[in-house]
Image (cartoon, rainbow, N blue to C red; front, top):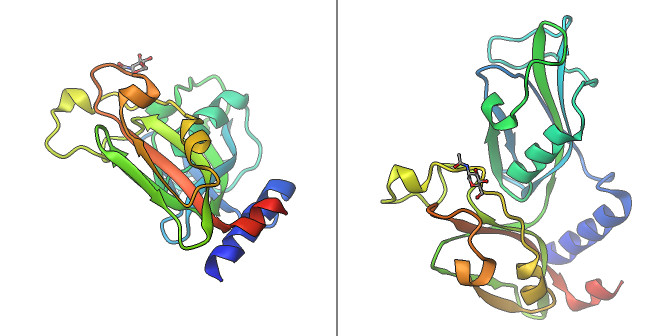
Length: 222
Ligand SMILES: *[C@@H]1O[C@H](CO)[C@@H](O)[C@H](O)[C@H]1NC(C)=O
């Protein structure tokens, strides 16, 4: 029951561009504040829009939250970075240094405004050299929503690793290989390693992050 409703939501999401799902909004002042997106309780992050802006009228609260503003001055580059960093994760934290923005926006207060939804999907992390095992219930098949082999933060797969191997968090490497291998199957094994995905950043200890849903086969045909 749970899984068939997930399949339905995903199907609707494809058609309506997630219009049917409630959106979350986060606006923070850019400097020195963490911009935090979270789908901890209900799936994985899917960023809709992310705007970097500068305005005189925006006020920053104590916690660094900015009064909501819907205009921005950034082109698509900031949204691309936020999507690459955050899509498919349960929780994503960004700071201004991750955005690579300069103060070119005008206005005295810089802010970042992001709208996202939480897709109801499983989130699976496999550290480099290990096997990822995706598994659905009986008569259900895997549908991969997104997969990423690389490193996007300094908190995942860090146990007993030297600093030098977890420093580069710009190792962004979305891959379609997991979908090609696993979509439509009930279970699937794939090695989180350079032999499968190539080496997107030499010297960095990487991990494979997969967001997927389980659907009844019938749902795939509709
Ligand atoms: C991190 O890895 C990427 C991909 O190889 C590379 O382009 C980038 O320069 C690296 N960044 C740092 C800070 O080493």
